Image (cartoon, rainbow, N blue to C red; front, side, top):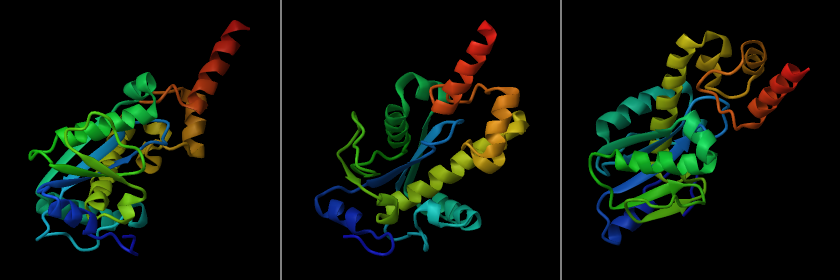
Length: 214
């Protein structure tokens, strides 16, 4: 079922099994040092699918914004969920990602009958049956749509955070460990939105503790 562009075959297969409302789910933000992990769930209207849907990573920022607006207008339902840096530290990034996906699915204003989830791990305790698809954002149109919604939503959140914490370059790096971000951490320390359980921050914290003992 793999083709060069996302398609609707997985959704159609679910429809033929009796599932009427099929949601695609994807996440963004597993790797950054700061900010939440964000997930989106999208139920497309098969009669009104925006043209050009693809894995958000393959699209330009301008194209993502255009498709974001088109998806918001055309989709049957959209749900967004996140897990904060505090939650990531408390439960680890894998479980926090599952949590964000469950929240996105729960946030749909129409309950999905079935979910298509990007990746190879099925989140526990979902509200409906589901199927994982490796590289699903490059195969399923619904997952591709979810990847765009999640990416744009998280990027906008990180821009807002940059207004309160201007030294870290969140508006440019979205919390990923760029050189500017790492230098700001060394100079100014972490914000409340940093993931203290991640390696560079644990190392920074240990260094500060050790210097305080000297």
